[in-house]
Length: 318
Ligand code: ACO
Image 1 (cartoon, rainbow, N blue to C red):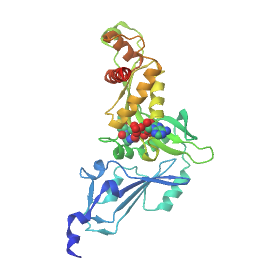
Image 2: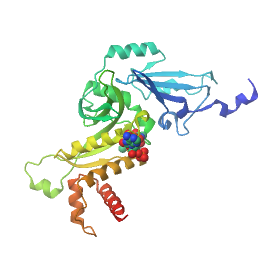
Image 3: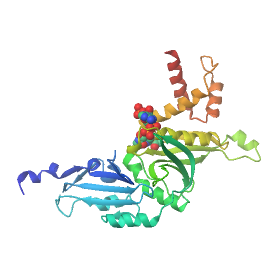
Image 4: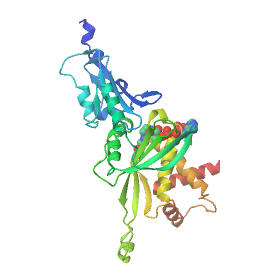
């Protein structure tokens, strides 16, 4: 071994670059790198002790049945981090390791049915997409959830797994649904229903109080091959429209939105509010009762509603 071989840098690999995520679709695979791997490989997002390291994490496009393959040219010693074992801790037990033929057989044998029922259908570039809604008490729903939850760690900063034993969670999954080919997973969102206290006065005065809820969008991901095509917009609008039509839902919130999600939410909320011509006839300065009424009508988080008012006023002043 020549002297430079002992340099730590020559045995160090970026875990974001080494990890290749693939979606095996009927006409070939989409492969992309994760944005984050620190929850799995540590803050520095580096793996020490290997040369020529490549990690393949592949998913069947419909069932999302996972396959893990780890290859390298040289390993420094047997004491370095076991990449396969480290990743398997974050993947479902059924993950097939190394044996691609076995993975293909298992995927075929399983004959997976997409869980839940389609709640919204839309078209992008002549292709049909459907949004399926399911809960974790649906066996197939739980199976799919456990397979796709790794994307939360790989694509959402500070993302973490939800409690998969809690049946309150609702999952909305987008699938590309061609007429003559296998369906392909595109992205998903998780949402939680919190009981919303109506205030002591209302609560105490009512004998038959109907439960009210606050919906919280917790995780929201469109996989990289499908980003910037309007899928995020369709998924967000589908969820919000469903909750606007539900009298029991009083407020819609988002947990820790990323900058990209804030941008998507602003555009969707502004379009919806302006379709309703929400500032028509409003006089400045805007009074408190008007704001309170509008926040309730549009079931928006107050800060988000005020942002939308400010943006619309700025746009009107131009
Ligand atoms: N052609 C070209 N561009 C389009 C089209 C189209 N047909 N439709 C939409 N766009 C543009 C939009 O104008 C927008 O432009 P911008 O990039 O300049 O902002 C952009 O595409 C994004 O809009 P969508 O396509 O509707 O959104 P997308 O499907 O890309 O989803 C999301 C956005 C969810 C943020 C996605 O990028 C993602 O998953 N990112 C990684 C994970 C993440 O950050 N998730 C949110 C975390 S916060 C939380 O989970 C609560």
